[in-house]
Image (cartoon, rainbow, N blue to C red; front, side):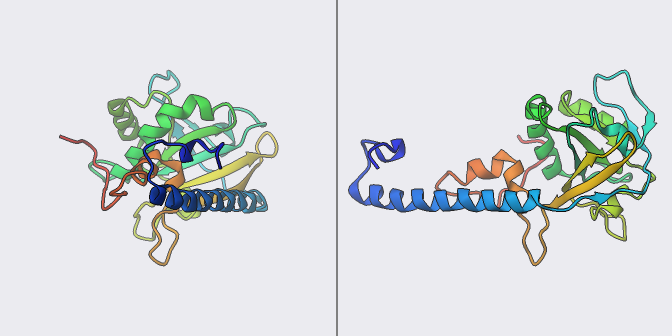
Length: 226
């Protein structure tokens, strides 16, 4: 215990130190549970993707704009998995989802780090020109963009309802051959049965708020703050 820095804070009272030790052990249990969940995720079987999808690509700052590609073309290499973020932005929306926007603000900052182990693409149902304009306004120069407008991609991977509503989520794929792709994981913020925190680990904002005495409370992100 004496070698644990968090328990060597000099201003701690004895009561605080005892409760902090209880919390430390709970934090270790939580870390172990996250690792068990990650191991279960890695054991999921691969599912071949037989449907062909035409995405229109055009990242901010890229000269490769408006070209149609399929899912296999979104991989930069066969060695790395492809992570697709399902961005909630319908063709008729005036603006995209504020929460998805907050996630992408964070992803943009770490994109260069993620690229060392995985390819990442932000996919939205909105047409490319609207998605690209929004990304440019937010300064997302580190994110690759693709529009799935006119395809069933979002619906086929559980991120679109029958009435066209979009859901936030992440899908992961691996490349099996030049054109062959397999699906290995899809997760969403919506876990069902009133559980809406299925992707909290992917965004630092919630986790930072959980360190404060007030916690995350009822905070919801906005597209702009005064």
